[in-house]
Image (cartoon, rainbow, N blue to C red; front, side):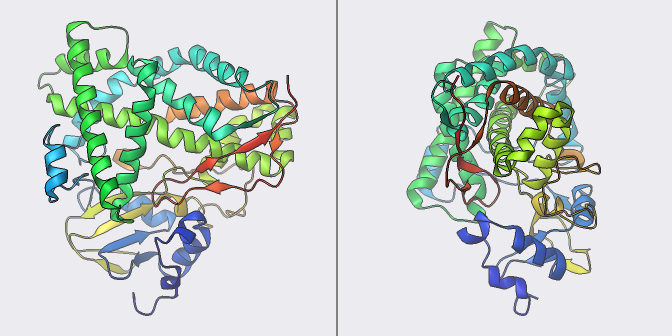
Length: 412
C-alpha cells in the first residue's frame, strides 16, 4: 500500500501538511483509512468508527510507552538528575491505569471544578482588563495562553511566579511528545530532557512540602487521597500525575480557546449570534472542539498482530488514533462535516479522546471556554480579526492551534 497509495503525495509530517491537515485527512478516510506512513512502522487510523473501536481495545492497542529515550549519553546524564521514566495516567493500560485514574478522579472531582468557577471568571475579567483600553490584542498570547496556565497553577496551589517555568516545561514536553513524528535538533533534545528533569524535581519538592504542610489545593488532596489507599502509589507516580495535570491542564485548553475565537471571528456573524442568543454557547464550544481538535491524535502500540478496517497491523507498530480526522468523518457527521455549524445537534465529538483514556480534565476546559465566551460577548464590542490577519497555525504533529491571534475591538 505504501508504494501505491495516492495519500503518499502528502509527505506526512511535512510542515505544509501539518499547517492544514484536512485535505490529507479526507484522502486518508477515503483511500487509506488505516494508512502506513511510508518507511515507518507508523499507522494512522482516520475513520471515526475505527478510531472508536481501537480506543476501546487497550489489550491490543496499548498506551504503554517511554517518553524520553535515554540511549544518548548526554540525555542520560541529564535524566539521571531526575527520576526514571514512568507512566501513570496516559502511559498505562487497565487494570494498572484504573488504579491511577481512580486516584486522579478523587481530586479532580466535579465539586472541585465547580469551586473554581468564581475565580476563573475573575481571572478572565482581569485578563480582559489588561487590554480592553487598547482596542487591540493578541488573544492567543495575552489571553488564551495565560488563562489555563494560571488556572492550573491555582488548582495545584503553585506560585504565580513559577508560571514562566511551568509554561516552558509544558512547551518543551509537548515538543518532545511529537519527536517520533518530527525528530528534534540535538540541542532541543537536550533542552527538552532538562525541562522534563526540572519539572520532575519541582513537583517532587512540592509533594514533599505539601506532605509536611498540607493545604487546600489539589496537590494536598492528592497526597491525602493516596495515603488513604490500601496500596498507595509510589512517589514518582504522584510526580507523573502532576506532570499530566500541568500539561493537560494548560496546553490543549490554550489551543482550544484560540481556535474557537478564530472560527467565531473569521465569520463575524457567528460571534454576533452568541450576543443575540447566548444559549448557543455550549453548542459553539462542542462544534469548535470537533472542528479543530486541539489534540489531533493519541499514540498506541500494538501488542500483537491485528486487523483493522481490513489492514493487517503487525505487533510492535505505532498507531495514531486520529481524533482530528474522526471528528470530520461524514459517516458520523453527515451534515457538512467540513463546515463549522454553530448549532450542530449531533456532536459526539472526540476531541478529548474516548475509552479508558478519556480526558479527566475536560469539564475544566469546557468551563474555561464557556466563561471566556460569556465575558467576551458582554465586554468586547465590535470584536473582529485584525485587518488582513490570517490564521497563524503552528506546525505540530499532535497539537493543533494558533501561535497568535490578532484582534481589534472598540476600546472601553
